[in-house]
Length: 137
Image 1: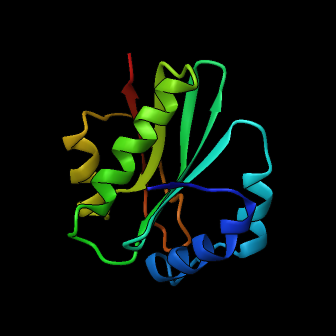
Image 2: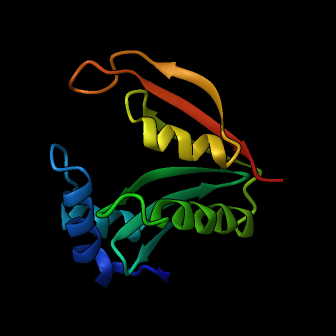
Image 3: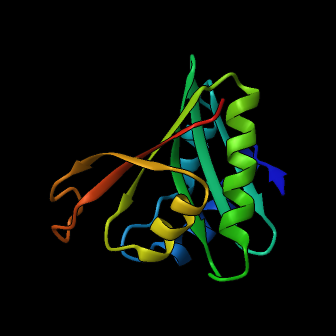
């Protein structure tokens, strides 16, 4: 697991494009985000990324993507992101996930996330997003 810097933006964008072919983030998007205060990115050399933002005592997963599901990459990235959020003083970690993404929903449930909201018709395809939170304390 590698902590990302701006020079990792191209690799992050490449993994994101595989994980989210219908809505990939650009290299410049990753560069801009990585340059913002409180934003951290992690990359797994097996083909996974996670990006989070910590502000005060809260953190938010901005994106999590894996190129090869079922290798434990998502779990390892999320465990590292939770540790990163804690180290930056976050008491709560939030994220949004497509309700239809059953694999991701199962991962977050395994990690102890609880549903705290729903964003109806949040995605371009009309799907709902679940808002999930985890107490990191």
